[in-house]
Structure formats: structure tokens, C-alpha cells
Image (cartoon, rainbow, N blue to C red; front, side, top):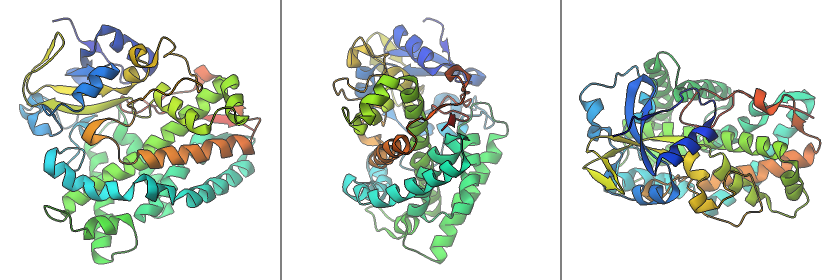
Length: 398
């Protein structure tokens, strides 16, 4: 067996790391921070196969190293690897029970009904951005508050708590944050408080709907509701924050592509899909676990081993996207990407993220046609996280 590839916890060049992993094979041994070993799925075809393979399960009870006590609770990524009882960590009937209500809330039809509200939030934020110029951090001023306000409205999370939520999740996703258990405890306290409030005083919001729903197999327990909320809040804002910032960065770095979108020659929906492919919001998804030995081509994944999906590698796979896969090109022929996952665990919030980005991007560039980066592209600093493609800030000039 060849030595595992060391993955960079600082995420200094996710595109290069994805290319390195992909070149090593469809399934490759990797080492994460702290010496934690896993397997990375690096090619589109392999991901389609393995994301629907019933032998790869979500429960950490099948993670041999964790069960043997080899993974300390202080490991910075423990909250991602072992996040609690929700639709993310279950399979089969239990997964369907926990996912059912969330899926109903994010159907394409229901999401489309939210368009006027998203457009109004976008317009209001752009008014505030204009007042704050000529140089602002677009992530803080626009890319974060848009999806956070939308998901906060759905859940009934007051705006005064949004900054606290952002701080908690940036620490939660960090590969280098200290005292991860304190962050997890703070997140649990926050979502637990929301569950307790809605138990006592139900409202017209998604949390109340989750708690009141009569799903097959029984209503959600407090622990299940809290874990589900953590997932909804994270996926409901973090994915879209990264999608918007990455798309703006890509367009400003490719003015010819931006002009095609602004002129109407290419629809903004194509910009969204190419951004999702080229710089996927989720860089690496931790984890699935082998419930038995799995042979894939010439690689054997032993029972009990952890498997991550490297969306960084998948998005630029030339076998799926052609020899120009490394190029940001909004005119490319549509080719299905996997940036929102595949199979039974595909992200139910994908329609909402797509709609928010498809509203936000044209509104931003219509309002500020001379938008430009306020620093060189190579001066943009990534957040130190193996889980998401995230920038610390996106300073722009109007």
C-alpha cells in the first residue's frame, strides 16, 4: 500500500489538492490533521457509484478507529465526523423519517414561492452595501446576511442572533480551532434553546413544523430536532455564502465570462452551475464508513474505515467535464456535477441555494457594474477548513 496523501488543514490551495488526489486514483488513502487516516473519493464516476453503495453508511458506530478510542473528542473535525442523530448520520428508514419534513420544506415549488422575499432581502442589503462603500467586505455585508436572513426567517431565528451563528459555525468548520467541544456545546445550547422555545410556544416557522410533524416512525425527539436544526442552519447559510463569494471571485477574475452573463448571452443559472462545479461550496464531506470490506477497482476499503468525498477533486474531473475542466467557462455544455451530493443523502436545500445565488448575482452586478476586487486575487485568504471552500473576507471596490 502506498503512503497516504497528506491533506492540508489550512486549505491553502484546494484546486491543486483536488488535482493531486484525482491523479492518484478514484479512491486514495489520505491522512488528515492529527494523523487521522481515511479514504478519499476523487472522481465523478466513483462518487456516483459509492454515494449509492449501501455498504457505505453514515453512522459513526461503524468507524473502527473512533470506536477503539483512537480519535480524541478534541479532534478539531469531530463535530463534522460525529455530528449527532440527524438525517446526516442515519440510513434507510430512519434517514427517510428524519429527512421527510425537511425535504417537504425545500421542494422546488415551495422554494420558488420564496423568490419575492429573497429579491426584497437582496435589494435591501445592496442598499446598505451602497451606503457603506466604496470598499466593503462583500462576504460580511452581502454574501452572509442574505442566506442567513432567509434561513433565519424560515426558522424564526431573530436577526440579533445571526452574528453569533456565524461565529459558531466558522469555529465549527475550522480545521485548527481550539476547544472544539466548547463550540459544539455552544451550538447545542443555541439550537436546544430554539427547540425549547418552540415546544413551549409553537409558531408559524419551520422549527415548529419539525416538532409538530407526525412522521412515520414517530415524532422527532428533542435531540433529533436539535441535530436536524444544526444541519439546516449550517447547510442553509454556509453553502450559499460560499457559492456567492466564489462566484463573484470567479467572475471578477474572468471579465469575459462576466460580460457574457451581464449581456444576457448566457443565463445566470449557468453561472451558478459553473461556480458550483468549479469551486464547490463543500470541499470535502466527512464521513461515510465502510460497513464491510468494499473493493473498488484495485482498491480495498477495509470494514470500519472512514471515507470522505472530495468535491474539490470531483468538480474538475476531465472524465466528466472534458479537457477544459480546469477552466471556468459558463458556456460549457451542461454536464451534471455532484456538488450537492448524490443519492439518498443529496442536499435537500439545493433548490434554495441555487435560487438565492441566481437572484443575488445579477442584482449585485446590475447595481454595481464597476465592481472589482479591492486586493489582488492571490491576497484573498482562505478560512482554514477542510470542509468548505470559504474565504475569510471578500474585499471589493465599487
